[in-house]
Length: 211
Image (tube, rainbow, N blue to C red; front, side, top):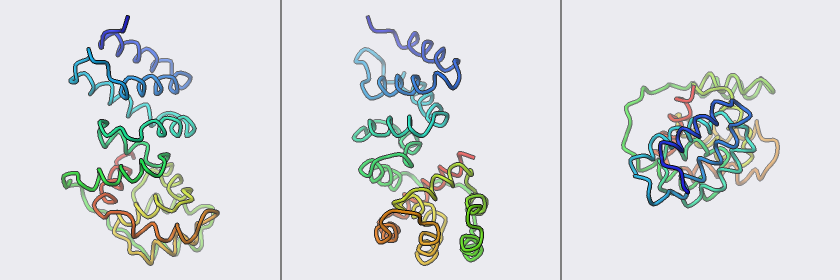
């Protein structure tokens, strides 16, 4: 017999209380629920489950996030804020959908962050292995997020944050070349033009809010 919504939420909260050892299982169970919402559950009950799903996604390891991200493709019923949590691990199709959804969101009123492009580029040229810290500070990003962005071999995440922060294509291209370790360089450099401006701004704002 299926659990009632409140009972299921209680069970999931108990799983959350187990700490890191239970987080992967918790995220998987939340994905099972949200991607196959029971017909006898009121739609109004989705919100607390979605909030717990979003919170848990920030606390699991990268491998778990990749596994769950693969399951989310084609599920536009999830709020864009939830999908945003998985952008860095998402497959190509889901990334495109996340950017498109951000691109049509209502404009926000967050304070504009002025980014010193020349200083950022100089840091990329001279700081080598310590650049992630300077990149995070200059763009007002959590350092863990900045590290993931710089480690994205496709260059798409870097294109999103550069475009979202108001940096021009030349600055993006120079940084992309300086931090590249592997991947298709031509595809990496073309990523900037394929990212929608408003979508990039909103996703960048989302990453900044993580901090």
